Image 1 (cartoon, helix red, strand yellow):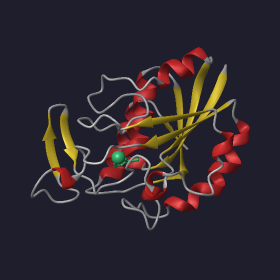
Image 2 (cartoon, helix red, strand yellow):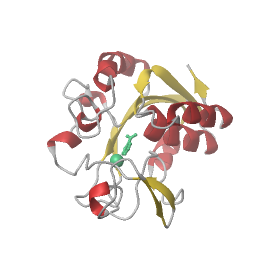
Image 3 (spheres, protein in one colour):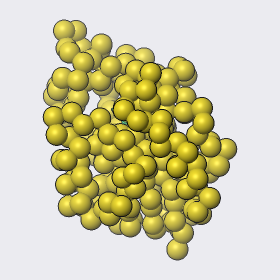
Length: 198
Ligand code: VGL
Ligand code: ZN
């Protein structure tokens, strides 16, 4: 039974100075690097949007950044432009030990659907392929760290638990956006799904 460390979206745009900066996002990098050696596999996720992505407020004339809209697949927060494919902000934090990664999985590249989760796009149906990768490597236990606790970490952890993985989220190695109580709601959702919050 193997165990993987899943590092969610530890990218420049989610760190202080980035386009969708999350407070303290950069603080977790040394702790995440130190943890990597304890796992059979290390997977990094990378938010990777085409310019003009439908999750950007700039793609919806008149819409305010951080407002909510309705998409065919459900409600969607409209974000500032971030993690555009190939841009500087889409790169991993420069101190992240990316050489140690077995797999880098990109998500959010479909122009019409956002993808918070490392497993499914926001329609909750379109797979990223990560489930198959982990299963074929015999991995059944996951530890998740990264950004943002209340969005991509939350969605990834809940999906993983629903798929039957044993999931732990290291809260000390995550940082959240926390808009309108989203952090408390996310922690409740993860707990309900059977995710262990450590
Ligand atoms: C994320 C908002 C938009 C995240 C990604 O990594 O949590 N949040 N895209
Ligand atoms: Zn995004």
